Length: 95
Image 1 (cartoon, rainbow, N blue to C red):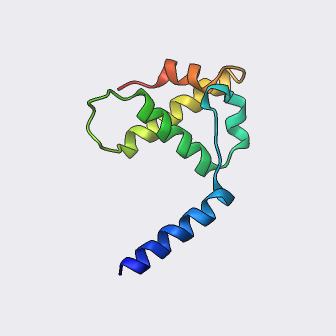
Image 2: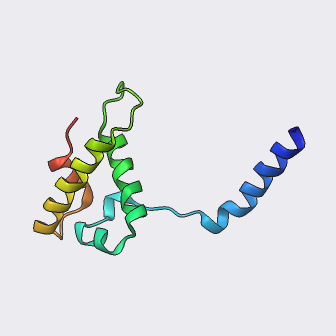
């Protein structure tokens, strides 16, 4: 079992660089969200929700809230395509 775990970790580390990617959220513009995949946008939204949540917030993912926040971000970004996603989040994300 231990050899299997070590093999899995090693394989994961060897494959990770091929998939590793960094994204500076502070430079993403609202208009950029239209060019990202739905999966990438969902990850960005989840990151934003974590970033804007209280430090002592419960470790719960509220998918209904996520959908509401996504709708608010989309509406804001459609009206303000040159604003950063951080500016948009500052305006529409609430806890």
